[in-house]
Length: 191
Picture 1 (cartoon, rainbow, N blue to C red):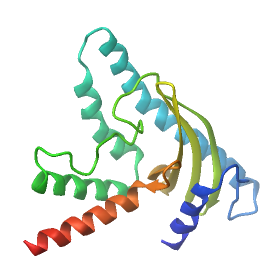
Picture 2 (picture 1 turned 90 degrees about the horizontal axis):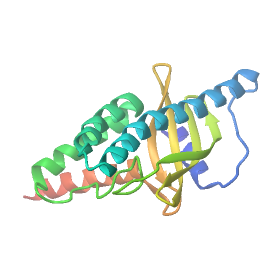
Picture 3 (picture 1 turned 30 degrees about the vertical axis):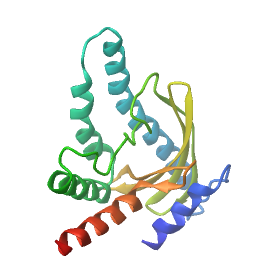
Picture 4 (picture 1 turned 135 degrees about the horizontal axis):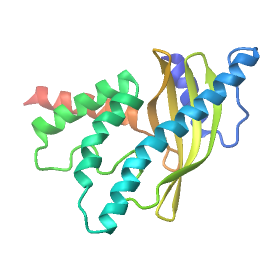
C-alpha cells in the first residue's frame, strides 16, 4: 500500500523524469510496455465509444452497446481492487440510491458525460516501482483536453488500471470510492 501512495504522489508531478526501481535495461523495456498497454486499453475502449458516436450521428441508437461494454472494460483493463470497489459502489447505489444519480455522475473513461472524437496523446510513464507505474496522458474529448494520471498495477503479468486521477482537480477516484463506501456503510448502520 505504501508503494501505491508513493506512485500516486507522482500524479502531481508535471514533466517528471521516469524513475524506476531497478537498474537494468529491462526496466526501460518494461516502461515501454506500460505505455503500449495504456495505448492498447484506450484504443479498444475509444473504438467502441467512437463507433457509437458515429452511429449516433446517423440517428442509430447504439448507446446501450457502450453501457453494456463498460463492465467488460473494467474486467479486462482495471485491477481486481478497482473492480471490487466498483462492485461495492454499484451495490450501494442499487440499494440506497435507486432512481438517483448515485456515486458516478460522469464516465471516468471519457472524463465527461458526452463524447465526440475521443483520443489520447502524450502518454508517458512518470514513475515505476515494482508492480506499480504512474502514467500521465492527455485525454481528448470534443475540443477539450483533460490531463489524466493513471496508476497502473501489474496483475497476473498484465498491466491494469488501478486508479484514474483527474490532474486538474487532483481527484483520485479510487480513494473517492473508498470514502463513499465507508460513508454509505456508516449511514446504513445508523438506520
